[in-house]
Amino acid sequence: MKVTINDVAKHAGVSIKTVSRVTNHEPSVKQSTIEKVNEAIKFLDYQPNLSARNLASTKSYIIGFIYDNPNAYYVIDMQNGILSSCKELDYQLLIHPCNAKSDNICDELITLVKHARLAGLVLTPPLSEDPKVLKALDSIDANYVRIIAGEQVTPDTGLAILINDKHGAISITQHLIDLGHKNIAFLSGDQHHQSTKERLSGFTQAMKNNQLIVENENIIAGRYSFESGVEGAKELLRREDNTRPTAIVACNDEIAAGALFAARLAGLDIPNQLSIVGFEDSPFSRQTWPKLTTVHQPNQKIAQMATELLIAKKRSISPKKAMIFVPEPVFRDSSSQVPLLNTTSE
Image (spheres, rainbow, N blue to C red):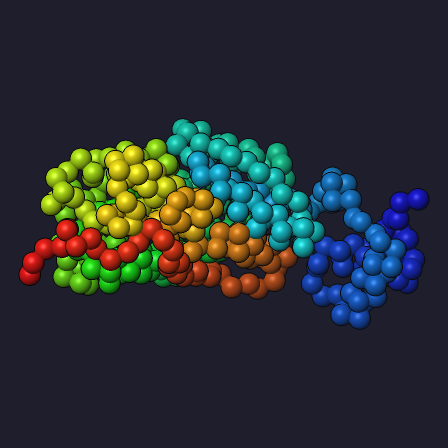
């Protein structure tokens, strides 16, 4: 027969309410009691029915993952990270893709929180950076944690995981400059993502730090997609050899993979004739040929930490308000010294 909470309480010599408090990780339970209940749970192989708990309890144990991102690898990493923390902390996960540009996005999220009885939300860009969305969630006192691009925690940051994209972009651009590149192009992602702005800021900062000119025509607007990388690279490669960039910084690995594809179609040898670097260290970076030099962003770990912060807040455990991740370069095969034919005399 299936083991019930009554069996655990009887075996541990405590009340059913005490078992419930332990399994829900509520504060103010003696450590000796927690150990006694956990020993009973392990001995009896008790598996709490999370769905029944949500229906029976006035509390919610469901975390919502809200996203609008075309990058399947990013979404899978986030999903796995959130799910890992949910399983460890006895919560369930609800996944909700949406259109951040929809006129009804605020009403959609308010309805979701109320009808699904969510304990909290993990918000990813661009939703986590949209003031209208945050104001709507605040209006119903919804719990949420944001994953956002940024380098400094401010009083307005709130519960968040910050990713220092600017630092990562400075580092990867400096890598190319150290290899002798001066004429470097930047392929942008979606403009409504703060990560695009932070990465472009890092790129321009690295160029200025080395007294190099940032040519406006070398900054190509685009989207976070493979196709955008193809289009952007083709635009750059149509230029004469003496004006064509010797290196490309792509706003993410999908864009970089698209740029690499376009360069190979044009008959260029990567990296001997053109260096291309990406950002995020997604599987794209390891599936291309040559493998991409990129910036490592531990999305699964970021999602785990965000979920832990959110649940700690829900349980009235005083967590850190915000944490910062600093991405670092990963050097592979798509970048090398500037081609001799494209160097210019001083």
